[in-house]
Every structure is written in C-alpha cells, then in structure tokens.
Length: 462
Image (cartoon, rainbow, N blue to C red; front, side, top):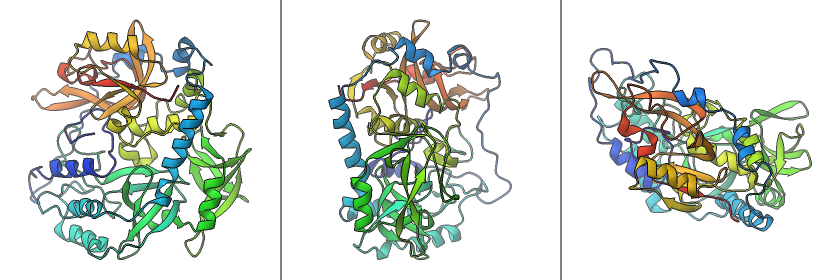
C-alpha cells in the first residue's frame, strides 16, 4: 500500500515513512454529515453476479501447478538455503539488539495522535471519533514522557500491532470503496506467539506498550507480552528454529492451553518438542516445553520445492482476507511472509518492500499482452512474486496459456451505476489470472490487475 487510493489487496505497510505518507493522505479526508442524523452505511458493494470467472475455472489447488513446475525439484541450493536462513535469524531476532527509539520514529507516532478534529475519521459506530475519546487516547499514550529505557520482550499469544494505543478502529470514511470497513487504519500488523520485541514505552495506564517488532513499530496490548531477560534471550537465540505449516495448532503444556499457532509461527524446536513463551505473574517470560503433532511444525529451513510450497499454500487456500492481520486472517503480504517462512526466507511486511526482496524485473510501460508474455518468459513458478502498488502474490505458472498467481485479495475495481468506484469482492486467498473480473460488465477495465502490475521479483538465493 502506498496511500488510500490503493484498492486491491490493501496491504498494511510497515510503520515509518510509509505510515507518515498514509497519515498525510488520510488527513485530507473531508467528513460528511458531522454528528447530525444517522450516517450512511458503508458502501462496500457485494458481487451482484456471483464469483469472477477465474475462481470458477482456474484450479484452486496449488498442487496442480506444482506438478507442472517440477514437483520435488529444488528451487535453490542447500548453501543458498543456509545463507537465507542466517538472514532470517538476524531479521527475526533484530529487536533484541535494537538501539534507542529515534526522535523521527517518535514524531511519526505523535503525528497520528495529533490529527485535528474533522480529520480523525470514524469509529466503530460509524460516527466520527469524538473529541473526548480521541483526547483520552492521546493523553494515555503519554508520548511527551518517553524515556530512553528499553526492555526486551516476546509475544505470548497472537497480538495486533497498532498505530495508536487502542483496540478501537479508525476508518477513513464510511462511504467509498476501499475506505471503510474492514480497513481499520490503526491496524498495523499482527504478530504470532514467539515474536521478539523491544519495548520502548508504556501508556499511562500500562495497558499498551510501544514496541519494535521484526516487521514494524507499533502499540501492542501489554497482556500479550512478557519481558525476556538475558538468559531467556540466550536460550531462544541459540536453539534451532521450527515453523508451523498447519493452521490452528493448539499449543498446550500439561493440558493447559497456551496459544494457537498458525502457518508462519516460528518457535525454537527440537524433534517434535517446542519451546513456547509464557507470561509469569511478574510479567517475565519463561519457556514451556510443548509436544506437537508430527507434521504440524517443521524444522527450518525446509527444502524449497514447488510441491513443498504448494503443500503449505493449499492449507491457506480460500481463507478469508484480513486487513493487516485483523480477525486472525491475512492480507496479501502477510500471506507471502507466512508462506515462505518455513523455507527460511525472510520477507518484509509490506508489498512494495517484498517486491524489492529478490531479483526485480520491471514490466512497467508494457501493454497487457506484453506484461503477460514477459512474465511467462522470465518468471519462475513458486519463487516469483508478482507486484503492483498495494498488492502482491505468488506466480505459480500458466493456465490455458496465461499467467496465474496465488494471492490474498480483497477485490478488484468496478464501476457502480451512479458512476462511483466500487469493488468486486473476492475477499480471500485464491488462484486467478492477471485479469480477474474482466468478463464482468461492472468491471473497470482500467482497474484490472494487469493494468497496474509493475514487475516481478524472483526470491530465494540460488
């Protein structure tokens, strides 16, 4: 996502310069209706004529394309895999060696909370954020009292990373495709159990912590975090790592539930035994030993083959889209991150950064036919990401002579009868060509994915 005009996969960005741009764009939104009368309901147009054709005709099974792509053929060497894994470990544990929060980062969070009345968007009741509620949140953030102290921590259960210390949403508008629900602009990302953090600040009430994660900065609920002392950090960093390759793995110790792990969750692993962080009464982290079902977690890095990627991806197929990880779901870039984690390949949080993570090839300026031909000619199935501003997915090969890719998508642009922009909502992880919805009368020809694709990136070292 580059700004609010991004309307396809709607990928949450890492906080920083991108978030500042987002905030500046959002600050120009003009509210309609004020507090008078009942607000109009969100205009997120549904599919008037069922599915787009691609979802009905293209096999929604990655194994089909994996067989065409060589099945168990290795896509990278063992030496490249080890180099990638070393980089993964560095990035994953980077918060524990992080320095002090810069003044520039602090200003970015201050900018979010300093939006003026009339530019604060809408709350969960589809009415403008009240001044009282906003000021209470800003006071609680206590950003005028940030010290330079920092403390290592770890996520002990699935947690949301937010741009403000609140679980309440902030919608830019209540009308307009890609502007209202489910696009909560406070939602930064989600974090799995076992994610290392560095805590830089706490809210006045202690309920929220301002943290640096491996992916981004943001606020997280304190109850989801435990503090990691040096002994705990040493234990975690010295152990071999494993990654969940199934959804909803229940982590229990002595019969007591600790957390759920979805695909992409990374934890220390030996055999079928995991180390899982738990929060003690003093908020300090301790390690619980957890035995999991064979095949639910695999040691990292797994050999990168079309068949192995397909086996993981098919377990995500059809899952609901989740903006920034909302409701425990994934958006486009989160799915790519989790898909490649078992193979020891680290991908950044947002789609634009992911496109730069490999060997990038531009197709900008080409015709739609030229783009398709370039992708078919140069992209490598199951290790190539197709990118357009705000959206990304995995190229898996061809179907009926055209490129197809696996992606988690909200929708594609349409034109409503009154001339406004709408959405043909897919709302889940699917395999499509580069022009899903083209056959629809309400589709916007200029909004088709192929028209917006900028390039492809081949990831994973040789």
